[in-house]
Each structure stands twice: as structure tokens, then as C-alpha cells.
Image 1 (cartoon, helix red, strand yellow):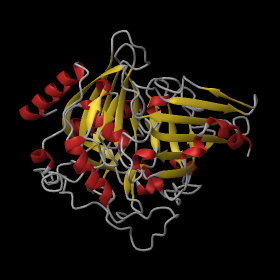
Image 2: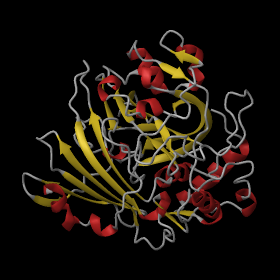
Image 3: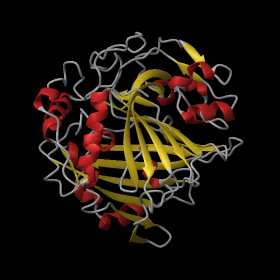
Image 4: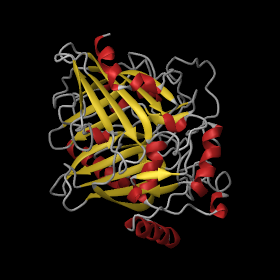
Length: 454
């Protein structure tokens, strides 16, 4: 993977500052001036690549397609596109330099796995306010607490010109997703033969960081509130999870509570973090794999490898569509390739290696983060012996009524067992509601019991 000398030096300097526990320096005003000129407003390279296979960014999707109504599923702006080529087990060696280790392992394990590659559409866009505050953050926002917290930031991408891996991951964690969002969706963990039971969930997020006028200094160390209710099947229905995610995990770790309908009581849940199993996941997903990665970073050493062109799931409107049924998507071993779309994009590559003396089921992870949106799109996971274990991907779309570019599916494959878990299946429900109104008062532990029995 290529990284220029200037960038490599910046990464080393950033790592040295972090090692001392000091606040990481922001970039200069001269560097920040590149945002909106040679760089996009959130820090991607504005120009296309030399081969012409990645076009220039021209603003992304700036208005919804004709005929779209808020509250309905998103129309595919690129429905007329045809695949340029397909990557299969037979020809994947030809494309080895743009595939992750996990993707190569999928071809090796499943003869039916296929990646249909379409023209690259740099569709990611965000509100103008996000662009404005990202530029301010570039010269003001700083890492603190050995990378576990940030300060002097507000609303936008905190580090649009990142100098180390911590800043790249913070950009993913703080990318704009809307102030308050609710959703109904399903998750499925098929057996190796393809049989599955749907787990129906209702989830809410309230992100205080995104509220106009808020800064990292006036939100009482609460990054966001998250509530998850299990609606089905009957044996699980009524369970509720509440999370207060902190902005500085070293100053105060996340707080979590669960309501158990059988016991009719609310209790603290300190294990809702790191590598503890996610809700009804059959052990196929850890808590820190939600939204591809979330939570504290302190158990790993993080390294920014550089940028690379990769085949990633992108503009996945067909998989997102209400015309696509869940039973059409789910297949043994992996989702139905007929509904998947891959494109060539530049991504940031970040390695996380488990620190000596720390515990986690993964000894290493490799993250691939979209330069245009800061969304983690791909991830390779390694077991305690250093062997490739899991592969994750996050097919994403531009929710252009917001606008924000975010995952519409999230799938985590266990390459040893032949199983996978897929999440955010809202095709037969309704799309995320970005107009949902909520307040911090709705996310107190005292309100949790009410949510579970309503």
C-alpha cells in the first residue's frame, strides 16, 4: 500500500504525540484551506485517479431524484448502470490488488460468491453546515486522553485532514448521521444451510454532537444516546437496551442498562462493550462491531497504513429497496450477489493490533474507510492465533433527504463456521426516519421499564 513520505512523517509525529498523552495538534490554516479546493469539504481527494476509473467528486447527490418522497424508500439514482465486470472465484487473482484478505477468503470458501462491479459514483454528500464546521474543526479539534477523547470540536467531521489512525476512526464515529433517527429493522443469522429466524428490532439514536450550537465542551461527555427494543420473536420480545456513549471514554466509559421483561427490572450492563456478543447474535457479532466499529479504542494499537483503491460495496440501492424481499437477499454463506453493487473507491486503511496484556477475541483488525464519507465499508478480523477469521462489509447509500452517506446493511461473515449475521434489514418495514423527534429525557434508565412493557 502506497503512502507518501510527507504523510508517513505526519503519521509518525502524530503517534509520538499520542504516546506522551498530550493533545494532538490540529492542522495549519494553510492545510485547512485545501478543504473545498483540492480536497472535498470533508477531506477526500477531489480529483479522480490517473486511470480515470475513479471520477472527480462533484458534490455528490445534491438533491433527491424526481419522484422521491420523504418517508418512502430511496429511489436508485443509478438504476440504469450496468456492471463493468464481475469478480468470481475463477478470475479473482486478476483483481487481487483491489481485494481485501476477507474478500479473497470469501471466494475461496464459497463458489457462489460474486462481486458485480459498477461504474464508480462518488455520491456521498452532507449538509452545508457539516462542511462549514469540518473546516473549522481542521484547525481547532484535538485528540486528548491518549486518543480516547477529543476537544474543541463541533458538529462536523473532527479531523478532515487526518494525521493518524485515531483521527480516522473518530471521523467514522462522528460522521453526520442526522440529529435524531429511529428505525425498524430485522437481523438474521442463517445456518450454513440458509435457514434463519428474523429478529425484529426498533432502534433510536440521538446524537448531541450534531445539534446546532453544541460543542464537545457543552454536551456533558455524552456523544449519543442509543436505545434498542426487541420486538420479536416472542421469546425475546420486550428486551430493551439503553446506551449512553461517551465522548471521552478515558474520563468516563460508556454506560449501559438493560430491561429484562421476565424479571421486570432494569439493571446496569457493563458488558455492553468490546467483544461481548451483540443482541441475539449467536456469537457472530461483538458489541464493538455495531456500525462496523464503535466504542473505546484503548485495547488496541492503531496504525494508519495509508490510502488504497479497493472494490467496496457502494450505492447499494437495490439491496436497500422495498421491492427486494428479505427472503430474496439471504442465501447460504452470503447475501445474494444479484442484489449487491461494488465500485472502485479510495479508502483509508487502518490496522488495529491487540495490545500486550489486553483481552479481545480479535488479535488484529483491518479497517477500510471510505474517503468521501468516512464510513467503514470493509473489515477483516483475525483470531488469537493471527489467522483470518471474519470478514465484514457495509453496503451503503446516500440518504439524500438528509443528506448523509451511511450503511443500509451490515453483514459479518464467520469464515470458520460458514455462517454470517446480517443486520439493518428494513426492506419490508420502512426506511430510517431522520425526522424523528427526541430529547435526552427519553433516554434515562428510569424510562427503560416503560419502553419494555408498552
